[in-house]
Length: 393
Image (tube, rainbow, N blue to C red; front, top):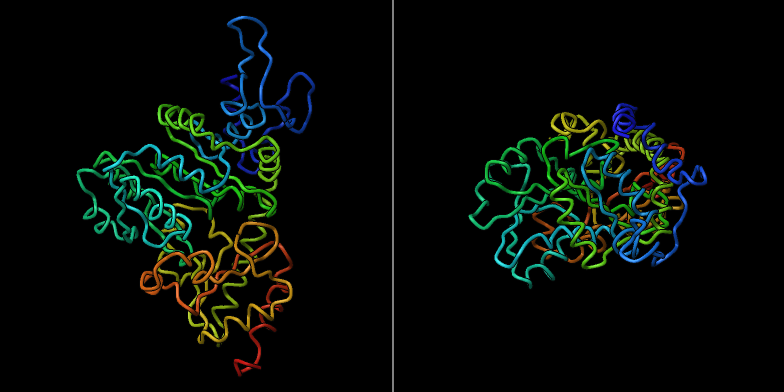
């Protein structure tokens, strides 16, 4: 078994993704992992167990998914949760009232809402810091600090933080480094290999890849931290059901080809937007003009497929949204279909206006999650939506 696991780790990532959950049921030899749609399991006899007792604790379908995700992220343990926010909630349960967290200032609005509306009420102290500035992060650390919580690239302005430097700082102060790796996935970036302790995902996005499930993942670097979180996972019951575990396993199998195509499209679209007369700024780490471009490619193998861009007039925003014919106006990302989002009122609407303005989440900012359509069709759709010199035309 050990030799097989070592051989599997030496395979290319694309191959490992395709093999996620392959022939996991030796009794039947089924190519696809079976969906064990059961809440409970029969015991062979008194004080005996098959290893499966109750699906809140462990379910065979979820177990296969969790082992696959741990292997893909280079971690020791993975836990499948009911949503990305459930994954972040699970990790937050590691901390007690009075603990302090240093958190990226530009991050998903739902994470900000959770920290401010829930965890602060339970006694956690949160400071939001520009985690691209290592000195600012160090100045924010207190005697009660328990962890750094980082997005890189950030959502939606795509700021890039130095994961190796943050991991070194975290080790020096005895902190956990928690990284939201939703945008990059293990296909492009593996924070645990750069020194992070925990990775979280909204698996609803790229890992699932088809806008048809809601899920979250937590992956730990160490078995000990994994066991602590597994105990909490079982205790609070924030688990992913077997049907969605199966959908997520199926999504993983095409992750490499989906991301390769969507990134190719995103690079072309970012270049086109960069040259458009109505676009003032493009946020995409794949552009050489991006301030974090070189750092990003020292810790990641790709730029992903999320682009944010600012137009030159707030009145152009509703015009673009209403005139798009193929790109859907919707709150999410990571599926095969392209979506456009208005962060100021959608994904980041719960941030105070002054905070949004300071972070650049302004009335002129749009976020484009690029899918796998033909890029010429995507450009044509954006071009016709932005055409004309008068805002109301």
